[in-house]
Length: 253
Length: 246
Image (cartoon, rainbow over all chains, first blue to last red; front, side, top):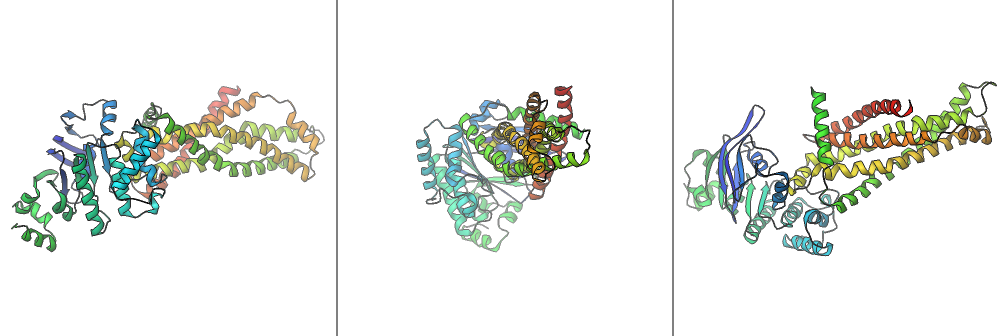
């Protein structure tokens, strides 16, 4: 479980997040939603330690990230998998080498065992026959899947996913969403997905966190979301006519 | 203040770069790859420049100081001294700063704007060390070889130009090259080369590592890498000359 206590983040005089308190449960797909520029990606970067919070702290299973020394942080990071919006695969490495990368850096196993593990992860995300290709030679959807394979290579306890569906067609988005959900269940990870894709929220979100006006504005389950009378949340989620029909079908207002 | 900020941050980055690698084997593999990318692939331009520069020094020396009072060995001697003392270690390093420095800054800068450095950090990899240390070691190892090849080719270029154009005999040129040779000047040149190689890799690595923004900023970082590497090389050249030759 990841817990955020009174987290605020400012860049100079610009305040981005204010007094965020949240608990991201284990074995759940926790989705952080909000408008573009609302600070959800900054929140994710604070959670993984890329941005130090201005105030407050992040606890990984009760242990404060800010209180950890360099070595402890390094060990914790080996338990974190992250899929970036851009996939962030290493251009100069092949698909197989990308998945092998964290194993070669940290795993204590033989080269053949590492290759077996990488092949297993690639097979798990349905990537076959592209192991020797470079990221530039595969589609955006495949890059995301390779990113997931790399993220799960070290059996992570925590999985962060930043805008998994951006730039993908609806069918591929569903494939990626399902993969995130399946991996969360299989590995019992604390999964945090940063998204503004409402199909994804309705499809796989176990717990939803709505960031608005720099604060955690609303939090609840998928069903509560549909029935919520929070005006800002409703305006954000059901801005499109299709989503309004979904709300009606799910018994919302 | 900005200059002090960058100097401070540069040395803090070096602290990260020289911290203990996660896996020596992975770093060594990357070092060998960098030797090929940054060193072996620069051989062509170094060879071409050296041959022609040696040829030009020989012709310039002969035509500008053509007098019966000038000893026969002066052309070979001048080519050798100019090449070993300054042309090969300094001018070639300045040119390598353009080629290698811009490559390093563009590569690391692109990785920064495409979140690949963030990915390394989140995995727990020391991104500064992983990306920059192999480049420092690779250039510090391979550049002295490049410079020695440059020295040989420049002196050879002078011989070719002199002999082929008939301005000096082969024996006079070779006698000039051998005249009053002090091997220490080669040591001096190689010390400079190693220092310049470290400057190129670290200054360019710094520019790339702290790139913020998009492709335009990657281009700006690349240009800065070349300009600042050149400036630091020129300052270091003056200081090293003062320290090692006086």
